[in-house]
Length: 194
Image (cartoon, rainbow, N blue to C red; front, side, top):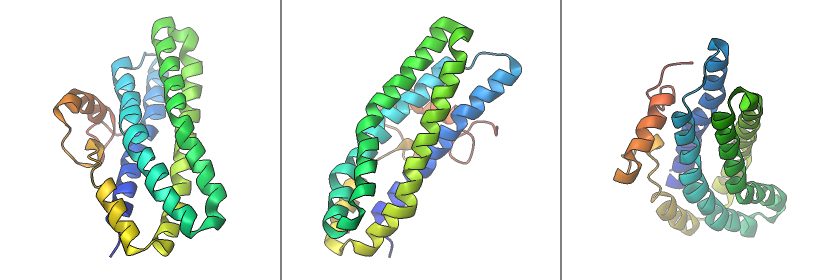
């Protein structure tokens, strides 16, 4: 039986990847039409990344999963260190992108190219990060972790209630997720196919 942790991580990755991929698509669509994007929707999408993956998902990987893997598979320390570095940099990276979005919103076309480039670089880096976790780290975890490891991890990760993975949002996040889901294409969101 596959550990619950692996299912949760993969579901969260899938939802986040769909949302991230929709950002450059939305931007390209607006560029083609010569229009400005819906800044409120973009702010909501970036806020989601900061609130959920950065504050819930990554800390559990860095503080719980990765130390167990270092103990049981020390030959993979370099990859784990790189992923931890990405996690540590994540808060700054999202703030930089939010600042670039604010500059685009306030300064207009003069900052469009800079934001679009920053968004594409951010999305590409994040997708690469998740790909490494999916292709290297999760299979490694399945091979080397023991039942008691999975019990602790399953308890911690099952507390994640990311609305993009089908959980109802807490009241305080309801309007945020309505905006995000309206922009993200199906099957994750309700937005139009891009």
